[in-house]
Image 1 (tube, rainbow, N blue to C red):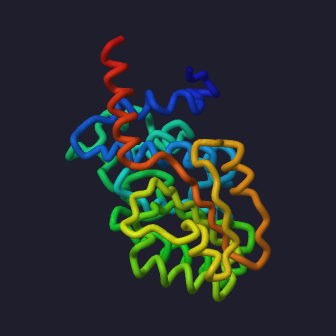
Image 2: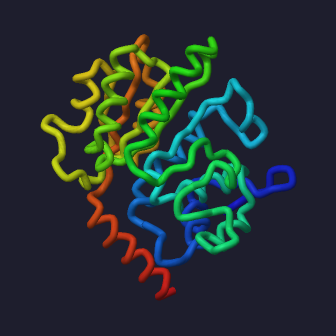
Amino acid sequence: MATMTGTRPHYGYDDLRGLMSRMTGDEKHGPAATSTLDVLWVLYDRVLRVSPETADDPGRDRFLLSKGHGPMAYYAVLAARGFLPEEWLTGFGAYDSPLGHHPDRTLVPGVEIGSGSLGHGLALGAGSALGLRAQGLTEPRVWVLVGDAEMDEGSSHEAVQYAGAVGLEQLNVVAVDNSSATYGWRGGLASRFEAEGWSAVTVDGRDHQALFEAFMAPHPGRPHAVVARVEPKDAASAAQATHVTGNANH
């Protein structure tokens, strides 16, 4: 249950599904959203050095949602952390709502990139980390959330290769793996990053402590990838349907 902090409610992880339930419509991409919920919460609750007050600070951490076609969980977390008014959630996807089916950086506070075309975010993240390095800003970190399927894209391959070759230590990738990639990877998705010189680890994408430890693991001189394994997409769809049915029966 939300508690009051100052003049606005303070939400916890248990409030996120209630916030997500305020968003309705045919283009929710529910499974894509729920697969990222735990990753997003741990990042914003315990890792990212950014707040509504520092969203424009050059020294902030940057979070880039490359998996932008399922933003419901992202909007819920942004609302829970005070970046946007919770009242916006009920207008999700409406003509005059700032919360579109793909996030828009010009409309949604705290959003760093416009996303939705899969495969773009990782390259943008590499460019962001390179730009920070060029400016001598060594403290900010760049975090990119990708889905396993978009790792099939050529732009993602090139970004992984480039970042590993030039040692973009400030670049961190969280790959949510729900077995939706067309081909998959021999040795698991982490092997793709390791082959290009990245630090990489695979964890349970629902285990908050395991995620936190993986996010905070040192990786001097190398970019870092965390592969967060969650239930397959079809299983997530079934679980979501059960959850909705269960709510309807109460």
